Image 1 (cartoon, rainbow, N blue to C red):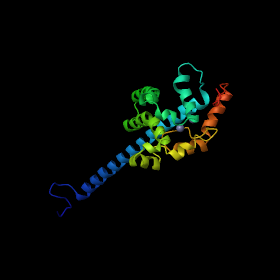
Image 2: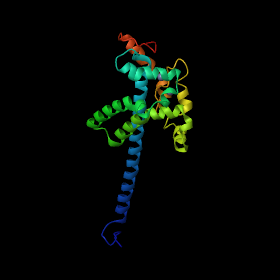
Image 3: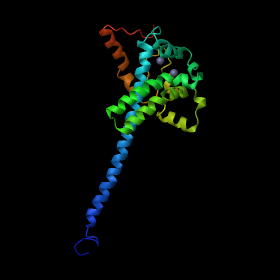
Amino acid sequence: MADGRNEFGKSPNLRVTRETFAASKKVMSLFTFIGQALMGWLLADLFSGWVHWLEDRVLRIDMPILGPAIVLPNRVHHTQPLKFTYSPFLRRNMWLWIAVTMISVAMWFIGLPFTLWAAMTIGGLVVNEVHRFAHRPGLTGPLLKTLQKIGVFQSPRHHAGHHRMPTDTRYCTLTDWLNPILDRLNVWNGLERILSWIHLEPNRGTA
Ligand SMILES: [Zn+2]
Ligand SMILES: [Zn+2]
């Protein structure tokens, strides 16, 4: 075509521009998907760390309902790390699933982007099993071992750091990625200091 148009009357340059635009849109969607999935997974990890820190350092064993349901089993897990790994599936996950379901429903109504919401929910639901695999590496096959190696699932080696006395670091139990940042920033100690300032002295694992 002498005027640069094809038989449909469209400029080839315009078609190339449209194809390039469509391709870059696909790449952007992929980046958005990965970004949201990663963010949701890390939020679930942060949630696991926050609850674990509360159980270890703030809540009391003699509290009604929460004491026997989550605080005591968590404290026992420090001295007998394998005990919870042998308890029935429903018993070791029930309270976590109730909490995650409530938060997840609330987040759905708030209108979080779907991928972020789904990753956060899935991460929250599996975190106790990921913790169990960190204590029982013998249960993991090649896929789980790979996930542990890259830190998507917390590795036994990383989690062992929490079990070193005085067990006041590495509270997050889903990945290997968030704990180094939170511990370097002294986030949990900072929260404990804030609680002290407002006269809600944390028991720091003594009660
Ligand atoms: Zn702990
Ligand atoms: Zn543990």
